[in-house]
Length: 445
Image 1 (cartoon, rainbow, N blue to C red):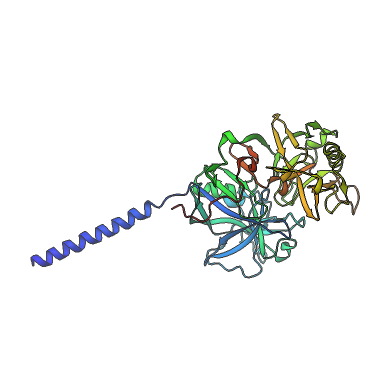
Image 2: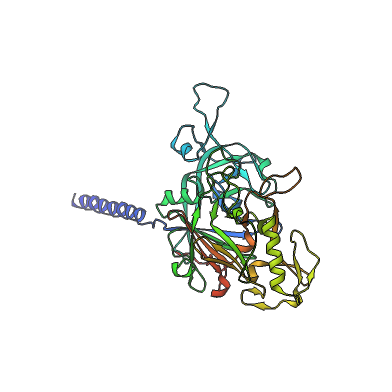
């Protein structure tokens, strides 16, 4: 009898200890303070690609990174199968977050509340269409800021389904767009809400290796131990809200893209001469201003600004550097044998974007020049055309200055949505590091 009691007590003790341990283990799993995405550059399209893991069972998928995109959208027509995918009903809080102006009603059933409908957009082909809003699980890699950690799950993350035809122009194998815009259903806001960390993210793009996007709480550290998010190393300028979206969202919605206040441009310290009102929004269509883009491979300028830049750059470079035949899409190319080199790239005149708070975003040779082979370097800016529609067949740009991928590679950009400001580093080559130096090879925990 005594042995039976002893065995019962021993079993109870062991069971209690085991369940206590399991409970403790569950509650002590660290809640991530930050998340990280690996970003690569497709050399053919010059698009920046990241890989997401979504669905049940999990499936990896390549998507194009769009810093101004409104939300995550993927092709659901070809093989999207998931037991955790569910539609977002019209009238729901999630639908309200998307600023949706439409619903999809199935079979004209009056009792059906419908599925929330949004407008996924392909910024490469400039095509948009309607798409239904869904929820599904997403897996993202955590980080302590120094190196990558374990994957964490985000149940019920909002995304849009899109038709297969919307993939036109995206890099081979890509199934959608990862939107990082400033609205409430883009990835930065959704991830911040899921993990209760700050609404901020950092972008560091590499021209030829792994770049990185951080979400959440700093620090963001690159090898060899350089904290690129340190406020002392960044210059800050306000993020400006364009009241009118320039893509295919519903009429009246504000833009999800990131605009900054550029008031002038200098080459070699000398200001360019052009109509400065181009750098402000017009009163009707939200045209004008300056935005940041990861889907435009090179900075695009309104025609009069572009011509002023080229003329000033050629003058500042001097007669000892011969111009050579231009190589599309560039309009100004030079004999590289007559251009020296520095720590921050070819020794060419510095280009400065003068911001509204009189801070400078300085662009050096590594970001301003593009090698096209055969000892030819081209000024890596392109003519976007006039600001408004002129005639069919004539290219135009609704934004006066679009800061593209070439000009932000190996620069660190910190988008602080909570404070509505942008922090930027200028070239990281000055600090003897690059955007390829985040440690993805060692697990943080």
